[in-house]
Each structure stands twice: as structure tokens, then as C-alpha cells.
Amino acid sequence: MKINSIVVMSLQSPKERFFGRLVEIAASGVTVRGIDLNAFDDWMNHINHREESGVQPTTIFFPLHRVEKIILDEAIGAIPSLSGTFLAKVGASVEDHLESE
Image (cartoon, rainbow, N blue to C red; front, side, top):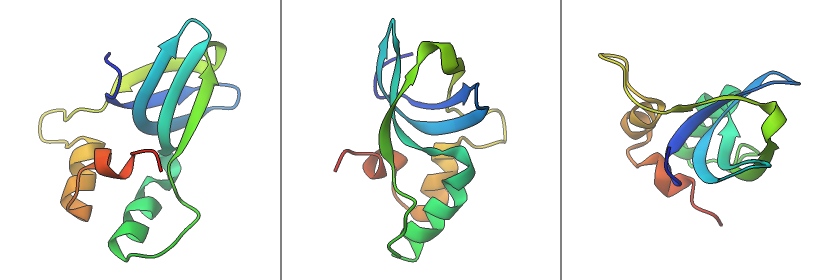
């Protein structure tokens, strides 16, 4: 996996999934800029309606002991990637909205 790839991370203790742009992989952990996957639809809706919300991307470090797996965000057959879904619903690339502010 390359830096700046769009990924979905499965984490443990507590169990959660995080969507975002891979910033760094190190022996101590992984840094990602993104959002909790549970907030993905809300984030797209707020962008579409141009509403200010608390659902904003953040840059976060996850220690390696929490990382269960990292999955590259890509389409699988007819099932679009999350990035593809974002592009279809928002009309802009997810990378544009994951830039540091």
C-alpha cells in the first residue's frame, strides 16, 4: 500500500472502522486522515447540502496493536468503492475533501 492511498482500516480495542487517506505507516503505527466509517453517509450529506457539521475529517494516529487490517478502497465487480460512491453522490473526489486544512 502506498502513502496517499484511500483505505478502510479495521481496528480493535475498541472495534471500529475508519475511512481515509493513508498518511504514514511506521513500526509504531499508522496515521490516516479521514472519518469513522459510521459517519461516512452523514459526511456526504453535509457536503451536498453545504451544511456546517461536526462531521469533518481528522488526522489520527492508530498504534499498531490496534490495527487489525488495512484494506485498499477499490471497487469489487459491480460494487463501487467508497470513493466511487462519494464521487457519484457529491460530484467531487474524496481526495479533495481529505486534504489537510
